[in-house]
Image (cartoon, rainbow, N blue to C red):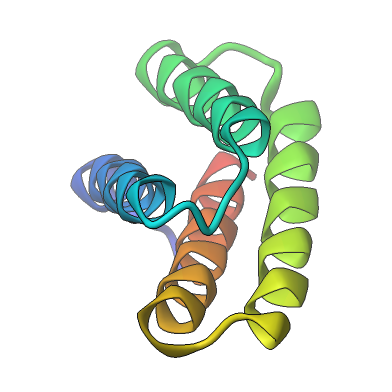
Amino acid sequence: MEIGPRRRWLLVKWARAYLDQLGRSQALTSERAEALTVALDRSEQILASGTSDRGRTSGQLDAFATELERDSVGATGRDQARLRSLAETVKGVADSLR
């Protein structure tokens, strides 16, 4: 199923919101948060301009999603739920680049 432009934009915004919440609770290191932010920035640029870097960026986002899912196993409470939600959202962004 094709993801519409508005949905793609919302996925990136939701990912940023989860990332912000997890950063404030210190559930993610600043280095990982920054790396994911860079990947999300690149995703927005690709979605806006249609550049051809889609494969590499979607692969990076898939790797981030896998790491976030793994991290969620050791987390508790809201951080666990947010890590899982961020992982799912990041997967959605990666899928929208394919």
